[in-house]
Length: 145
Length: 133
Image (tube, rainbow over all chains, first blue to last red; front, top):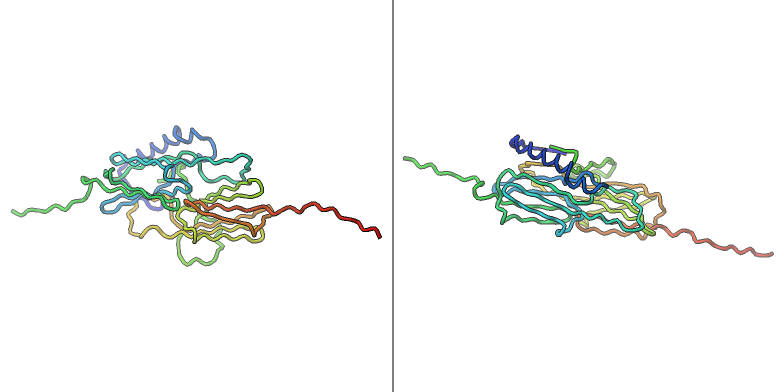
């Protein structure tokens, strides 16, 4: 559900779409059959002066079931939601997604991967990605002759 | 920017609840309901909720789950992607099994609410003695 979206470079959009398609066809969806065909966790991404913030809702996931990696302007998140089916249980409803969920997020700018911080609280993952020095806006003084 | 492959967060259908003091969307939590031995187990995803703002009500076989979620955004964010909204959760169930409502227990961890609904003890077979008059 896209509530608001600021258009990005068309090539980036195309790349995002291709990533989603490929993940859908060959990715984790093909590994597990049931019940989570929808395997891309939704994200909210916003920008502040010197950081990019990424937030995801990952209920039931422990910090050791999260795998984050940053390279340049790309953040990838892999989440394991183990399937906890016990013997002798009958499911009446099964809506919560299980299995590996992956998402690659293309950030608008390069980030400083050494200073990335992630916090998990009440099933909400918040990742703070400080912008790389080269990507920060700088004020340039004009020297008068 | 939505794709069929992205996990969506459905809006709650039941709007019949007490008047809300805060505007915003109300969402329907995803649940697993399973039967385990002599109890029903309900697991509901309510990420962002705090344990003291979760309200569970069971009456006449109707289970009602309500979880308040404090706003996380200041309203000044410049969103590049906004695929889900943040708001309270609400969902009700009609439970057909006989439940011992006094023994319902709940716990909350990592954004998941777990409810244990023990089945009511079945009436034990009794032998009825016939008095000879």
